[in-house]
Image (cartoon, rainbow, N blue to C red; front, side):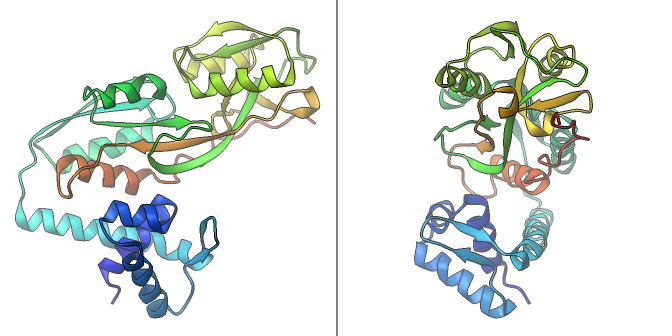
Length: 294
């Protein structure tokens, strides 16, 4: 039988991206977490992680186990909550970036509220640069959003390329200066796009300031403006422009969950675990993609 203690350390190492961060998250020593992983690999009989001096990578067998591990830990939490019938009362104030305000997250939130009838979740949609200060001020309890080349601490959900979206019907000969569709400041996509264009010495102008991903895509689909966006937001009406059109490569967008340190079995901790369980890696599955130009 798989020991939940060992599985918990395994999941933490994967979620936190390393042993030291996992140890801090679990309030254990790094050697204890390493020992848990060694015991689990001995029990399975296969390596679950590849350790290098700089990173930890999950093996194919680790990928097979991680889903079962999350399910086992979730069942343990559900069983404990059901048998102890712990009361869940209160309101959680959640900040959500435009990239996340879609059906997968809303289903996770509704399932959580259905399970914990005393819980209320208030959602504020915005951009991470504006939402994170609100969390630090205590106005929000939790923020989920994306960053580019930033060092704000947070639990990594996934990463994907940030790309230049353009109309599939428009000419590939881009006007100068480049017309851009951007979110308002402070926005990681905006900052990354403007910085890369400046480094490349390419002139640009802000043709459209957007307040939603839908309007950003619409500007690109119409050929009205070039839009920096995550690759998963590319639809069949869009193409990805690249170095062939003289455009600089953009950095990856990292999608993270930001939260203060919380005690286990609090309502906020359980919501964080529900979001991680329900959404890690799943939003990264793209829509039916547009194609890069030939």
